[in-house]
Length: 530
Image 1 (tube, rainbow, N blue to C red):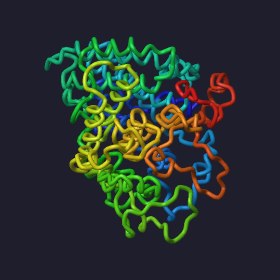
Image 2 (cartoon, rainbow, N blue to C red):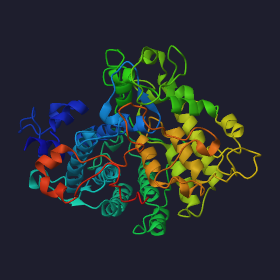
Image 3 (cartoon, rainbow, N blue to C red):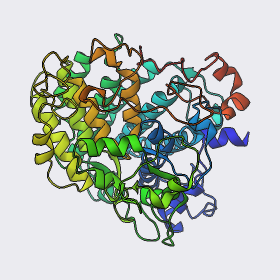
Image 4 (cartoon, one colour):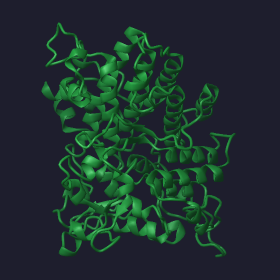
């Protein structure tokens, strides 16, 4: 029964460690060295839960970084055969499943206790952040436990709900969360007191929470753009009626509990340096993917020196899956860059404003959004925001220097300016390409979703690629992301999903069994209609 508790019930003692809360904050009539969900309060849990959400976004995606052409294993390490041959197992990537459910159990505690206390701001945050985690779970695993999950010992074997049904309910959960936050009384004596301190993402800013919720809804709508069962126009109308809009210029959703040298930013602590200042194992393992780093150079993109850091041989990458050789030891290769790891005290990004603008641009192209800024303006804003977040300086010369090229210029009419007879691209091709450049190391799951949900034939009708997107080829660069060059690899496809964890087959066998045989190459997420 221990593993079921791990998946669906977080040991709340971990929250005390994560927040550094004083024991006096707990009920003095209980054993405060071993707190449970009956003794901890919603205001104590929320900052730890938000920090944990940031850790999930920052630290779970190394394999996807490799698959999407951003990073690759350095020659200092032996091959990861399971990952590099795409023959993933039920033991692969379980941290995403476990951490999202653990985190959502925390939010469920906040939601329940805040509702009992009339603390609508806290309850609203919990509802929105639970939706954020369930979006991750559906996008990685497909159908997952939802309606019967998070009940702890009340139901340790929850049924699986269809991904499309979960998505539909997440819209309503986010709406409810926004409404609760907007209506919350934040007086210094009420149940929402100290929200500005305990809300480590937006410091109690109601408008920013509404914008984040709306942008999260837009992400869901874009993922499901081809799903007839989700009414895009109706959902956009609800967002418009709410009135706050989406995350805008300078409005990155980031958590900042007070990261310090001894309690560093999660991404920094995983991919740059330990608390003691030593190079982390991940920093040695993950180096620049040759295809990816060269693509930035191909475009004269100043972000290259921000998403990558030069090694002894400069901005040199390695082919993904290449067997270890002395030329490809970690020190010779470019590594993870300063625009990503920043400093140990930097906030941890949950959702970037750049992504918000790119989502709006795609929604505008697809006709979901019909008013407001036009597509070129939204794209320019998104590129500018990406440069600003990464500390890459002005994007003006990058934009002007790539005029007419479809991976930068959304109005481009060919893959090479002045070349007659070249099939037009621009549009969606530009949006997805810029998301690839902007979300490297920041939200790689969104890039993997784009890769799976938009077949290249939909943006270039002459293409024979009907099951995934292709980067680079539309502007004369090598098509990608490239398949692993591992000698053991026999696959020409990147997986479209993760498998359910082995613990589900061990402890929730009847319910996971309803999903039948799950194949990482053919059992697609509901919005992946290719």
